[in-house]
Structure formats: structure tokens, C-alpha cells
Image (cartoon, rainbow, N blue to C red; front, side, top):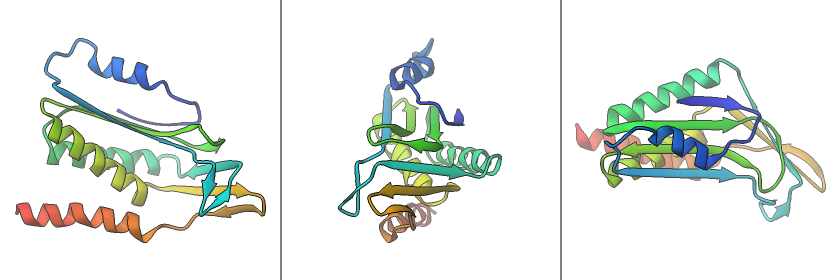
Length: 155
């Protein structure tokens, strides 16, 4: 399940929906990303995420399908917020469910690495000196590359 929304999400409710009536799930892994109150050592008062409607959902669906092709997942959830947010607010929820923990952990990490680099979101942080758009980080690209290397090693 994929959702891109402005509203906050309820982590417990999302897990309950995923588990409802299921007895084939042995592991559920969740990742919740939240807005920090600092960026590069400077305080921030707000973060705004923008996206390209339609394209964003399509890319998230593609990423989710890729995870299901790589790991034996029973289900998954990706919820990503957009719009203005304050420190402490939820940004993203990734939930993966599998019969076994390793697949659930790896798939969740894979999904987050792809969301940080390939999902069409643009982030603006507002601090004491005003707002600034955030550039991609090399460390996020490096994290993503390991999944390409894992795919090549498996071939």
C-alpha cells in the first residue's frame, strides 16, 4: 500500500491494518522518519516537502514492487507526507511484513535507501537565516549503491 498525504499517520493503526486477519506473518519491521530540530548543526523551525503528484506515487509503487521481487514479503506499507512540518512531526512510514525477520529488515532498509535518493520529493528547511532547499547527500547515494552491488552478486 502506498499513500502520499499531508495528514499525519497513526503507526499503530497502520500495523493493525496490515496484520488484520493474517497468520502468515512472522516478522514486521517498521521505520518512521521524523523532522529533526537541527540541520547541519543549525536549528530549524520548519521543513516543507514538495512532490510531483502522480509521478511520486508511481515511483513509490515501482520501488515497492522491486522490494517484493527481491524479498519474500507478505505485505508492505509506504506512507510519505508532504507539505509543511514542524520538528517532531512524522515524515515517512515504511512497514514490511514477511514470514522471517531477515527479509523484513532488508526490505525495509532497501525501501528507505531508495526513498532517500530516488523518490521525487524536494525538501526545504527553514532556520534563523531563512529557508533553503536541501541538496542530495553522497552518503545516501552510497547507501543505494550497495543494493545494486547485492543484485549483481546474486546473479
